Every structure is written in structure tokens, then in C-alpha cells.
Length: 294
Image 1 (tube, rainbow, N blue to C red):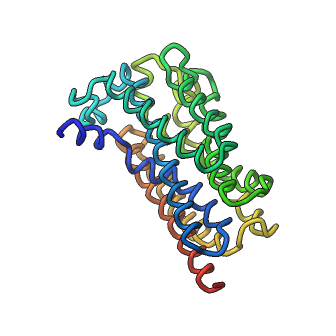
Image 2: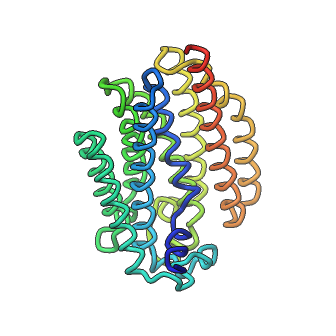
């Protein structure tokens, strides 16, 4: 029983919930008039997404084990503390992958093209014998493609038209690069010690950190452009614009702290909370609009 608890603790619940925000938003943007069938299909899709990202993060834990052993911040995790063996983490990753593939296949077999690409890219990204994260800017490209794919997967659950989903997905693709740039900046010391040449190690963590800020700003402008073109409801811009000054303030605080590891980790946590908060507000606004319509 304890082992089951350790497996549950090994799942990156917060990160997965954040990642599921994009497909959930896509589902809300395309949901037909509410019915029990629609509700069950949404739940089915979200469970499939959960297992897909549980697989990705579990495999990431397995692949990053050698470098994570020197990361004090991860010493409390079940894998690093020895409660779960590395081989067991790999088993968890494969089980989650199989469950996810089966669930997506039951929704629509065509979705497996995107799901399969996500899985293959994720494996190549962290597998010790390939380690694409060690190739300049490949990590950015991978997070861009995967983040666009996440949104498009959610979009195609109810909509047969892929073009609007791709256009909106580009917004989340850029945010994927933003999140990756902050992640690499936070892992700079550990990656440098482990001789993993991420973008932050190659080009300097300050440059990559600033790139993240600039891209986030551009993503906000792009989303407003989507609203101006009526591709997304204009009221969804409100949480993005209202929270931008807070985002800039948090960025400035971290920059003034000379990008120390502790400061970057605090910034990343706050950024994720802010990102999750924006997503929650968007979902609430969409649900309120649906209730008013029906």
C-alpha cells in the first residue's frame, strides 16, 4: 500500500494541472450545447490528458535521474529519496502512456497521430542516449510543438475544423517556450554541474530568462490580435491584460536578485500560479457566457 502512495506522490500534480489548462480551454471553446454525453466526453478527454502528461513527467524523472541526484531541491521526491526505484519510475511512465493511448483511441483514433508525436518527442527529449534537451534551441522547438498539439487535441474533440485551433494553439506554443526558458534558467546550476548544455548553460541564464519575458509579452499581444479578429472571445483578454503588470513586477524582482537559484525557483512557482490563475479566470468567463446563452 505504501508503494502505491509513493507512486501517487511521484506524479507532478501541479504541473499536470497547469498543462491541462490549454486543452480544457479548447474544450470549452468548442463544446456543443450541454448534455450528459458532452459532459462524459469532456471528463473522458481530461482523464486521457492527465495520463498523457503523467507519462511525460514520469519519463522525465527517469531520464533526468543522473543529474537530479545533485539537485537539493528534488531530494525530497520519492525517486530521489529512494522510496521508488528508477526502474519503477520507468514502469509508471509506460503504464500511464498505455492508459492514455487507449483513452484517446476510444475518443477518436485520429487523435493518436498527435498523441504519438507527443510521446515520441518526449522520449527523445530526455532519453540519456539521445537527450535532445542538450541540442541548442531544440528544447524550445519541442515545447512549442507539444504545447500547440495539446490545444489542438482538445480542440478536435468537438470541432472538425483544425485551422482556428492551430491559430489559438500558437499562443500556447509560445507560452510553452516561455515556460521552458524559465525552467532551464532555474535548473542552470544543476545542468551545468551535470554537463548538460541546455540553452541557459550555452548562452547564459540571464539571456534565456529575458527571452522568456519578451516572448510572454509577444504572446499577450498575439492573443489580443486573435480577439480583435474574433477568433477568440474578446473578454478573454481581460485576465491577460490585468495581470501583466504583476508579471512584469515579479520578473523585475527576480532580475534584481541577480537570478539566484532560490529567486528563480520562487519566480517559477509564482509564474505558474499566475498562469494557472489566468487560465481559471478564462474558463470561468467562458462557463458564465455559456450559462447566459443557454
